[in-house]
Image (cartoon, rainbow, N blue to C red; front, side, top):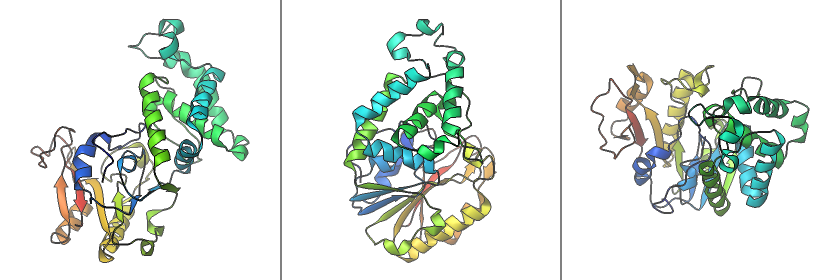
Length: 312
């Protein structure tokens, strides 16, 4: 199931990341997995901590998958060399080396004022359509540096495919460097591939009974960057649940992460689906506050009822 009791954390601050829930989620996964399919891999916090004969990372964000491929295929020394080269090239801060006073900044206020011009230049170069003709490993290291220096270290592209987050308050610190180093090492160890397809196009016939599909889709009732422009609709929700039903009919194990309720909203589609399959699927309530799981949510009006739904 997992390689050890130590969990590797993604170097990306991806919306909806499951790192803090791993202790609650992973013990509920099968012990023996041939192919693990991370259907909405995002920051890869789940897949990177799975022990399976093969891991398939899938996401609709092509830039994200190309970045992971870069981490996997480029030697780590070159990756870090290029990161520091880009930081220097765009005159971005590196507090771990020089300290805050070197940039006339304070830790409480962050580094946004100093980094703004360099960040905007980096963002413009990345989004330059002529540059897209020469996409290579260096190009995606540019993307990583941009993510590190962006608002809350997050990832967001507009409908034209351009990265559109503003500058953030942080820079490439020792903690991010350590997370990236361990993430790359684990990625290189894994027998993994990266795919970019809509879940509706996934070929179930390529799976067998020893494979396992984990689905962590955008949550229908929560407000996140991937839902701002109708990125996940009720039709998507219905289609995903039908896809999971089809997996079950074909004797393929799955686990679904989702929320039944959040801040007074209810996912009625998901609740109805659970009720229809009460004898087929099992609902595990997780502790939304990421403490030790008690599998119960006592106050559903003030927090989210986050669940893991399995068919085994």
